[in-house]
Length: 367
Image 1 (cartoon, rainbow, N blue to C red):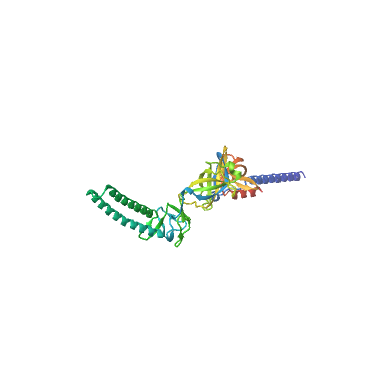
Image 2 (cartoon, rainbow, N blue to C red):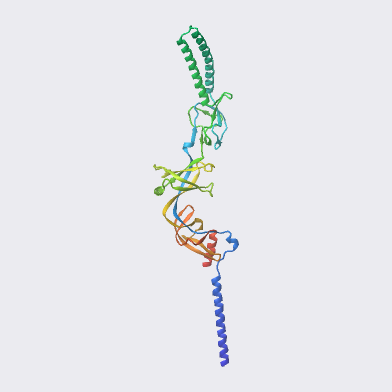
């Protein structure tokens, strides 16, 4: 009996030891089980460390592209007639002096006839002056008669110069018997109201508009709630639907002091260089005005933040098998940057690309 009891006790001890050994093994396995990055997926990630910098708050606004009114010319004809031909279309780029249209007008015939008449009268006056000079030299003609002959010739020549200047002003082409309408400046045709056969009157409506778009204005809408934040000299970032990956940068050049009652906004003007002509008049743009604050904070790319359940999170990377979901409190947002109030240290590293995939994996493991 004693031997049997000893055997039973030994067996029980063995089972307990074996069970404890299994439990320790399972606990160890549980501690080592987690999410690890494989090399292929890691190559698809981008990592970033927080940067301590001055806090910049982005104020979202909207605006529209407009041509610089000082570089816009509305062409109005000085004479009436009928357009016989046009050499341009709306949106064309034109060069100063380029012939854009031709105009037939009775004014050209009248001016040409008057010019021919004056040329004939000048020839007669020149002959008369020569004769008077000869008679004055022989003592037959008086000084008064000589002065009158000279004055008559000078008046005729002055009239001829006046008509020639008018023909030159109207860009008359005697070969084609038309007035040529030339581009007053280099730029883009942004409006056109004429075509072949159009009858126009002198100093009537604008025939076309040429705008130099190498520099444009962005007219920004500033609503009442943002008026106190927008100041002259502020840096602004501008984006368009046409170029979603490109940011245009400028500064607020002026703010109107008159409230637009129809749109319920003040207008701020931003002047931008547009040598590549990407920005077109009438194009709607998104504007972010950057307001600098008198403080510094850790900043990361806005792409790094995951928003879930009205909270903000980042994925903190320590090693391929040590990744952590970290809740952070946001201080401010501006220009694609998030400023962190608390929850992240400047020496830590966060994932800024494909972090949402990692977030879902870690969240599933936690659940």
